[in-house]
Image (cartoon, rainbow, N blue to C red; front, side, top):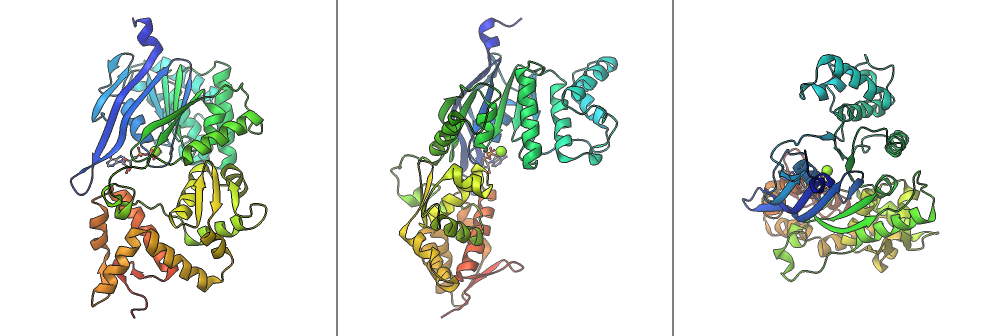
Length: 436
Ligand code: ADP
Ligand code: MG
């Protein structure tokens, strides 16, 4: 039997740090001093930008990886492997293609040693509950994405977990399917029909968090920390157009655009600035389109992010990436949930294509250190060429391989647009477009 105190504290994460080795030998700190408790009876949301360490924290709770330091406990015991009573739903539909729906769902129980009659009974109940009645003998390839994700849910529910972990469970679905599945789950939860005690859900979708969660933890990035916590005191069913709903969405947008405290060391010495600035790929076409949209009515240079995201049908994470890219290039400023064009941004909107490229190139050199570095190296070398590896090695001193990849991809596409340098994908070589 469990004592009541530990029973209430299903999960207790305290001072958890986690780092991963980077290419250069140094470690990348992904989670920094994270505290989190989960009680029975609540749906908790982890909201944060891509790369802020949400999945890493979920994997620690699922017992798939260990913290580098700090303690992660389930019902008072250190998590050393997958804890009993914790089940996970993944973003992509991790189903076995050669098994039927029923067999896929039963699989969750096999490992628990449940006998076959009981397995069948519980699997059929879970399939029925999640709305897949009649598809028991279908194979995954015969199902739509939304139905496949329902199978994923059924497989997690069938074990009657105390805690259901969900890692962006709706992000691979189309908008309508995702919404149906969200409301179905919330309805089942409210009616007390889900055989689970609590849910921890990772998302980068602000509205999804407000729609579903009782409590939302906002993660900051680089490294991931719990930056703020919000209680959602809205009755179900929640209405996205409700004033209080909108208000909380606005507040969360504002919290997520709040800048981190300025730090003391020189820019070059800390990741995120200088050469170590990690770039997220957004196309220069999309950026110039966004500048035009912002400059035109009704925004006239100043947009509320949730409104802009709604109009452009973008998710929070996407609008942030765009806003950040514009901010990085000094064409706009993100602040308190708004995106505001700078003078340069306004000027850009009124220029023709060639003049835009020139302005973009100037800003790229001035504000994105890696662009300046590439151009300098190309200018200085007699051949005016340099292998990509020359810059990749330098980037990997500051960031993980994935981030270096993404950063180089971004710089290649922006550099091409600005005609700052050329890049040969085959040879993986940078060169000067017009060496003069
Ligand atoms: P999120 O889920 O918030 O997008 P993740 O937890 O997946 O973030 O990743 C956070 C950071 O940790 C990223 O920089 C990612 O590259 C890094 N990371 C995650 N897992 C590993 C790993 N196994 N090895 C190295 N780096 C990792
Ligand atoms: Mg993730």
